[in-house]
Amino acid sequence: MSSFLIVAIDGGAASGKSSTSRALSERFNFLHVDTGSYYRAITAELLRRSLRVDQIDAVKAAIPSLHFGTQVDGRAARMEIGGRVVPEAEIRGPEVTAAVSHFAAIPEVRAALLAYQRGQADVARTHGFRGLVMEGRDIGSIIFPNADLRFYLHADVEARARRRELEGRADAVAERDRMDATRKTAPLVLASGAIDIDSTYLNLEQVVDKIAGLIAAKLG
Ligand code: CDP
Image 1 (spheres, rainbow, N blue to C red):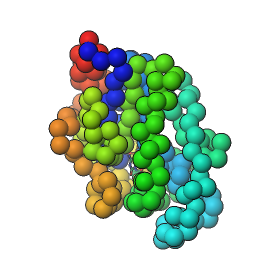
Image 2 (cartoon, rainbow, N blue to C red; image 1 turned 135 degrees about the vertical axis):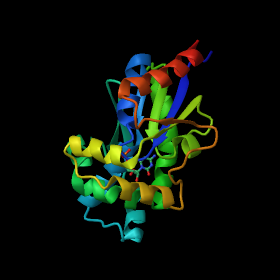
Image 3 (cartoon, protein in one colour; image 1 turned 90 degrees about the vertical axis):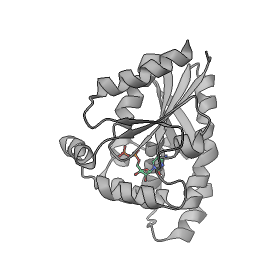
Image 4 (cartoon, rainbow, N blue to C red; image 1 turned 120 degrees about the vertical axis):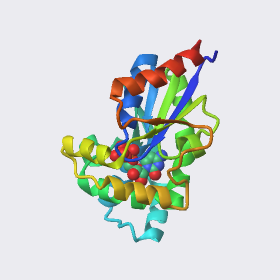
């Protein structure tokens, strides 16, 4: 039995992390943190400042001026940069989707987010949530290696590319996975001890039920 639970959900592009995490946050009154949206918000802001992925020194120099904050919107945490939440339409747009894995591979960008992401547990506690469900690529390996539960969502690459197509979003799923899995700092990996779920032939409800059963057991 635990009074506040931290659940980590990692997986490749379009593996169903966001829908699963959102459903879990509603079922258990957890704060939902989509760390991909944080990397996307930073990418949008850097692009807005006309910085390119190959201007590593200029990107590093810009980091201290980003000033992160958090806005809690229902059960979702949204990152503020300089007091402004970057709009969803902007962070899901094709320019950000094409650039995000490049910026996310820069160690200084990841370092800038490390303490901020860990601090989201305090945001959740302060707002009276029963736990935190955090999704990303390195949550169970780097951000919360001691999370109460850690999951890794798999799905074959064709199934994931199809999901994006159905959403009408341009997204080179396999290429983003390749970049995320091969970068030096905090690559996408099945963390040792994480529970591996293959969602290729499961629907959202089946995935959520599988994870929810384990959360319910922990909550007692
Ligand atoms: O589009 P999808 O929901 O699959 O991806 P996302 O979760 O929005 O993440 C966008 C990108 O951010 C990923 O492709 C990674 O390059 C990066 N990311 C990361 O490096 N580490 C995380 N914890 C989360 C996202």
